[in-house]
Length: 325
Image (cartoon, rainbow, N blue to C red):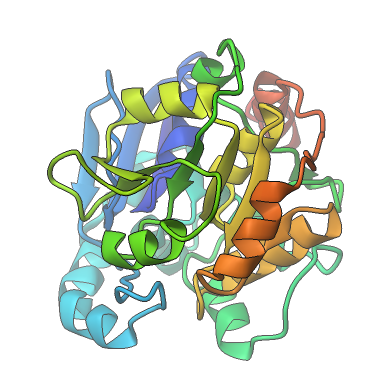
């Protein structure tokens, strides 16, 4: 059986999930990996990843979705050409993690394609969501699939699974040193420093795609994105301040770290994630709010949820459900 695993390269969460899924899929047949999108700092080692630009989301320095950048930096002509040229008929099984080129290629050829992504969880009525017609349409039409399964912080539906936590996170010897880890890639470090330098009795280690070298101002240390170093700091931090993505908040909860999230304004997925995190007691703000962050620093609240390793079971279920086992 020839299998295609296609994933979105905007953000790092899709790649962290793929690191766990791909070795399991290899047990079922010949595996090809395809990725589109251009806003990730991670790589998939040991895999020959075929990659195209696709359609990416872009943000301004205040952390808001920039539709101007999206129109300017995405080539819709190139996207349509990639859709038409993709050899989708070569595959017996197609699993799609919110990747639009293969999704539309399969749709055009009327081939079955399985959606397996966090975004797919937002297609179910039971999932916590905010009202946003544009966001709802993006989730529905950005990478359409014939069948879909989702990942979320809770199992709101039988087709929604708990987060996949990477092995390298599960084996960490987690400690609590006196610093907080920050990953807010849509904010410029200057904005972050202005806010966090005034938070009392706190030290911050900020990883930013804007940073080229390590630097420090006041109680805020800035690092370029480095997966190995970031993972080490994640294991040892007291708490995590990050966007309302999916994988990093899930990893922070798994490691029993204090968690504070700031959803990217205008990004439907993150606003919905924030609703779900609010429901389980996670602190949040809609911007870099110094007072709310100070209150969080002063608190000792930690959200505890069990995320067992069910990845092999999930893939096995998919194979059985789609007569591929």
